[in-house]
Length: 457
Ligand SMILES: *Cc1c(COP(=O)(O)O)cnc(C)c1O
Image (tube, rainbow, N blue to C red):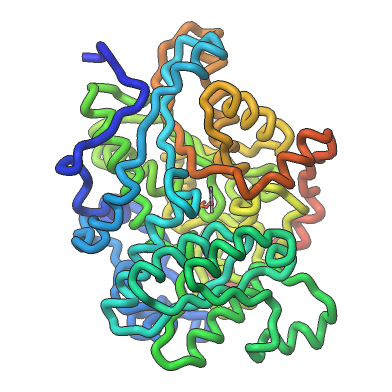
């Protein structure tokens, strides 16, 4: 059936997914339950709802319902920028002179520039439906804050973003996009919260961290009537919303009778990867098909390839629920790395369990080779990729070059999560030859593993 495959495979509006797919329902070994940090017992919906929206708390703990309806309002919003194209990388194949067929699912076609809008709009919708006034969140590099600002503007919700101070100062453009969409952006640590005041007093002049911004956002949500806290990655609800990526990809491939052999995604907290691979993994779990699935992470923050599978705190402030996951320890501070969205110490509990069950594999790559792959891709495919996305490009190119040696005509599919227009300082470093690779030593890791809480599970 593989006759004329267009450069871009689109779905018609009536072919768009109407439900998200909850891969946990098909997993024999479910992800370990998340724990209440106070009691260290599995957390309940009631215990989650002071912090999270009710429907999102339910989705977080639901590991039995395979398909969850996408509310019509969210489907309507998706139509503005979805389906995202599945592109056959004919030009990259030619450049690499490979017999492999390469496809990429491009999520950078919206103003936020990444896949994060897929979950932001869902989370804003449920907050609005619950009658809330607004939501609070943290942002590091700024992609999540931008996506959430857009989603809140659409549903007329107040959006308060705690942005890591160093990014707030160094990434003024992302900050201004958020403000243009009506969000309040506060550099963290701030003097608006108790935890912020405390950190400022303890570490005068600190430029902040993601863990600290999370603690501030959670405090702000609980301190204000009608506010909840939302998060852009790691959580199972986020991965669920991101399955729109994989469901579209699968339908588009099926439309042309294409069977993927290798599916590749970059992994920070695991949401885009989980969203892309869920429908494929579902077939594997049900014994219907087999795929090679590869998670790609930075060598500077190697949670899957060098982390421990253990219960850990999801935030440095240790106030969020504990999750069993591949982790480097919540105290792990990755070295300066330009793929900001991949600098998380842990990994989605779903991805962690799939990896532990050997349904997926993982590779770590160093940042200079990632930027080299990004440049190769940009030159032939016309898209300037985000540094995060370029981790997947790097491994897709490696796999295509292997096919060149073996002569195999594999179908390689990878997730291109976003564009890199706000990452030009990183590209500048690369172009100036000033980019360095840093890999944590065994000693670094042993030190941060020592901070893991002692919980059997
Ligand atoms: C945030 C981000 C990522 C990583 O997040 P996941 O939850 O692992 O998907 C990857 N790519 C881009 C462009 C991002 O903004």
